Length: 397
Image (cartoon, rainbow, N blue to C red; front, side, top):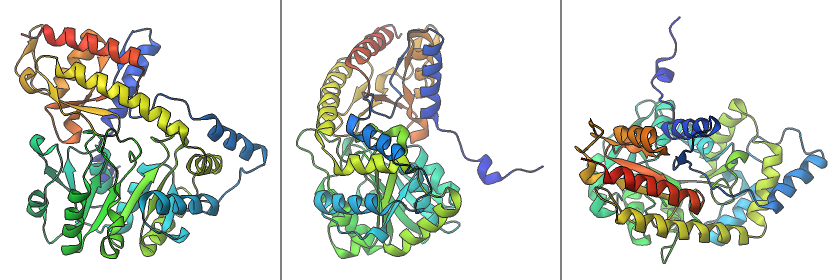
């Protein structure tokens, strides 16, 4: 039997594979330090868990509307108006099984076969696969380190063709942690409007921004960019709710309707109890977010300062999210126990096998000479892992 060629071309997530391998090593009794996890190491706050328990006790265990319960959609609308300066009606909100699901719905709703989506790299590895699932063509724009890995208008213009349908932006970025400024976003908005494109704006890390940087939603500038924007967000990163699987999209009503229709056939509604938990997260007290953010900021400073002093590698200090994007720089061509490091995959394999440190090689993020470290881990683990990494680097020849 011949299976789907499109499905066969979809690659598994290397980040999930690295995390799974590290967890298995730990289960086998190996003292491994994992820097792969793209999730907060904190527990979901108590008031959020309590809302799910109450929903269960109240019997809220049946189907809900496919695009989400009205109360949650209304809370999302209020949040977007109060915090992001954008006004949406509830029929423009689609709640899904995580932001990944929201993104997949988006591309399925806006793309026809051979439509192109410009994706600045380095990019979260799932973007490319999601576009391909929707029969689109991902067009990768390789950004430069000197521009803090952010796309310039000249680079975007160079990627345009008559098949370009959309641009995807992610700020703060996974894997770089970089944040687009308001000025940069206004230029991007003008580019999108000028060429009559859609912009898919992944804002999942919006509340994890440090220092004097601030988050700006591109849809907030004017009506022209607003009606071309599909905004993606969720509760996973902000509220330590990765396993609850609640994300959402805010979009023009016609696009939201299509997304809702797709979801109604593909998965029906998001988990009913998780929706109640998400409602408590978005509309409840926010002190928990500030507590987690302060911890991430402390870890960020420590990790960056340690990496900056290590030989052969370098990084730009991240402005948001919880990742450090590390350039192998002078490590390439060096050898460890007679094995040459020619890319990030080799580096990741060697340091895992020898030092029991799991990092994410960024080949699938579009940069084979970089790796990603997550500081969504305890300070103790970060210190131990970086000690091992420094020892590894000091032994390169």
